[in-house]
Length: 307
Image 1 (cartoon, rainbow, N blue to C red):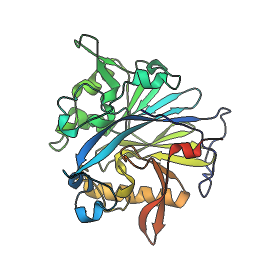
Image 2: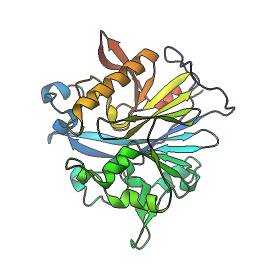
Image 3: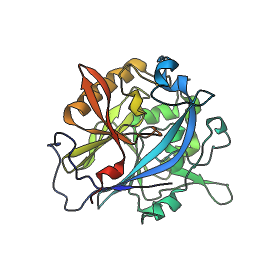
Image 4: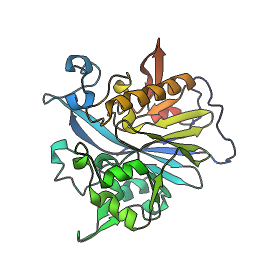
């Protein structure tokens, strides 16, 4: 899969004035495409009619939409932070309905850009549905045990999300697999998040609760700009309109309320959204047109690379 390094330099609208300039190094960002899968378009776009959403996001003859599992590696110099890690390969037979393709091996992919899985210091999970955390563990060679893929990393999870993982509601029970995360807990590598906090001076973590309880959204600050790894708060660029929420959102009113507040902040400060699931758009700005939010300029991470 393709991985692109990005060093933010070009301005996108108004500068982010709260950036902390106390680090001498250049932050490096790498997108890691961890695979793709299919979901039902009606589930993806909820109550929005197909004749409306299919003009914006394509589907096949089975009404299936292609989704990415786009992770982000942040190298701050002292920390190597990975946000989400796809589905892994442990449950692919069970999840064959979703048609997963191109599921990566992180050892192989990280080696292409000069890293190892042991280099990762932090893994930040937006949440613990299988397409976001399955890559954290894998079977050993003879499939007798499950082992950690990132053995030296602290794994960050919202506390409410962890509680939900342990005691899921009926809507989410099939999205959680104990073998994805219990080995992390048993290894003493799990860290629970109860409040918004700064993981580093350049990476802020904030809690959201609409799609599922205790989601973590990362705000990455570099050179006067902010990139927001938005996860399932806004899964694809064409889900930006506030009412365009997924049927997968467990708390729909909360999802809309939180998304609206986030989009106001993003559009008002010229932040950039980074999409985990959009198979066609990696990043975009957000336009606020008389209170209605729409995708702005769409682009790839490599457009920000320093020449």
